[in-house]
Length: 321
Image (cartoon, rainbow, N blue to C red; front, side, top):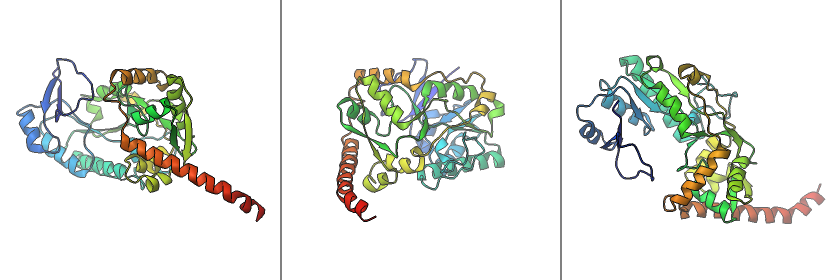
């Protein structure tokens, strides 16, 4: 079996691949560079992690129609209707997220690919992960900056009251389901949730990191709706309202039927130790992002100023009743 990885060659994030993997250099947003990289190659399966909208999807159809027996599109479980209509979330649930542009564009991409499947037989399989992480990518809104703030005793912002349920999936577990779909003719034209059953409330996720660091997290709860107002420049702000603030638990019975080997084994309370080891071994890649740290400082400052104002006004509010 021959495995090819196509990317721009700019950033491997400290990750290594086996020598048997063939690296191809090209930019998926530039079809000419992709065609130059792949030449006359044809594939049993193509997996695209970088397809975010209808234009990206249409470009993939043009590039790979007739070149692959299967095209696996990495979509997102963020696209399901918010607020959640049922728990657990199944693949047939309404795809409609009025709060999150990223999710809406992913829906457009799915629609374009499924239209191509119906109209010309383009062999698409759709995969919907939800917040996948590994040792080099912690599942925290703010990434390594959050871990640094916990470690140095700075206050950490959590959206809402910290009790929304959230599913996180280790990349090694996702890979079992994903690889199991490769070459499966029954998977053509189908969509799959691929997530673990490792579910925590957000305060737990932060507390697990703090315990692994040997400290206690200083959590400040901020209403989810405040993030786009206080930090419109931060990419996670829209996600707070359109995704993270909603409890997300997924039904994975479909992927288990198609891939019996899919049985996630990684739990965050154990995986966190590997994350901290990776941080210690890769200080440059896990450094604080000053812009993200500034967002947290802004939110924390706003919280404390608002609280002081409320406390000053509270006696009058009570006496006026």
